[in-house]
Image (cartoon, rainbow over all chains, first blue to last red; front, side, top):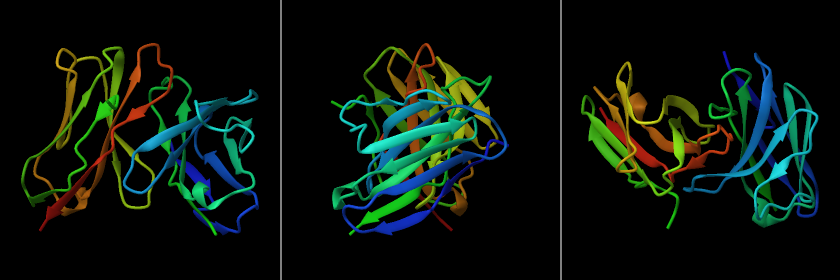
Length: 117
Length: 112
């Protein structure tokens, strides 16, 4: 158990457009979902934390108006990159924590590779 | 200084070797320590989860935490080519805030 999916797995878009990435917990209810960004050969950097029905908490330096997070249900969170620019090209990964295990344990999705032209 | 330091490697070993992967950290408040395995272009997969100091074993994997030295290790016995991946250490503060701080990751290649 504890499977997390992401869609799409790969997206290319033009500069100035918006892109939505979905993160779903397939076989469990996720009390909290997390969004990370990973640049090539670098580690994962937490962007924001979201709880179902609440506003997301963004890490310092992450623009909340640019990276819109909606946690609509206990199994779905979305990240929308608005007015994307080439510097937003990265690997975006979501994770989810399961009720009863605490937020120290996170199950990661397969990631979405975003390329902005 | 980064909160979590991890040698990026790459580390190349022959099949069957014992692999030792390590991370050091600076924040003594970290209480939860994890090791993740990440294959190329995939999301990280949780391998080991340890609370506070001590050892934990799961099959061919052993995780060690030495809080006095701020040093954690992952040992892989009888390494296999399928173990070739990037291994990320991660840690979080007490109180279970959920925020994970990751090391840079060590790339491991196990040669047949």
